[in-house]
Image (cartoon, rainbow, N blue to C red):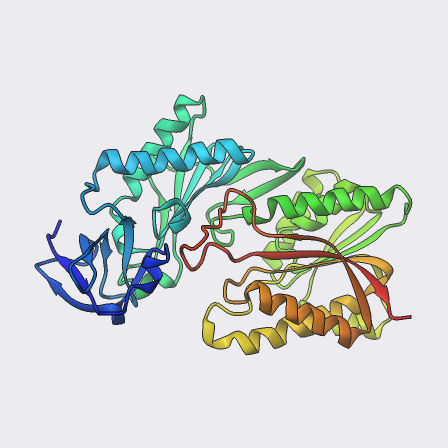
Length: 408
């Protein structure tokens, strides 16, 4: 590894001084010493004050991702094992670990790395050059720790195929780490079974971050079904059917899930069959953005409406455009709710922050001539921890549940 020292410009480094993990390329005054991209380097403030160590990559706008605030800490095997063990012990304390996110990048102080566990399979996503050098060591550490808890990992699959790797100067990588294995894994979450395709599914194969939110909807529907045996639900942007299936298991009489992806819809149908819910949970292929206005024109109404769209923006400069999109789908979604019915809506875009998202929903309610009674505001599951005063991406999921009442 190189012995370089990065010196920040005067007045820069505000993010890491506030507890964050990133230093941008325009915050650097100079680099003393030799280094290669991916090396661990020291970071000093403009006056020479040591701020810790991180790995450098001048290919990226995020030039440095901090690994430790202790300038004397060796980034060695013991250090990596401690970080991995801390992450695993945290999950064991806060969530059902049968399937969960085990490592969540900066929020677990292992920047740029995601590891998800699906029963006895691990899926790795490496997004930064520096952490890429440690990924196999981290996987080995996880396997050792889990084996101590009686969990035998039968295979590891890498899904480092996101486009963002190109900005790091890295190739997109997808394939087995170690021996090949069957990549369709059956998991159970909240009593619902799913077949997770870790090779071809989105991201690492499944959206684990909505675990608690899906359970909240299952519980709500179970309560509603006690007095409404004909309860109807529409799940928009259903992907592989998770919210729809939770509502079906909760006792809804009629559930329809829509998604633009034919592959996702076919997987959702398979999941419905797996759970014995095909008689009351159906899935259809449709572009939800076009579908919602058509359903309103047809006068369709539902007791429960769920909107779980993909991120409408992944950059800060497109927030206004994203707000317009979120506002429109929420207007259309609210119009579909029966008077006194229920509405769940969410955003998984980090840049669509709590304030913007809340504003959009209020505007949509006014436009749809609906009054909202908030039942719950939720975020991502505890295995996707939100690091306060920290990294800029760990808090991203916003999830509301409302009762919807017509203006009277």
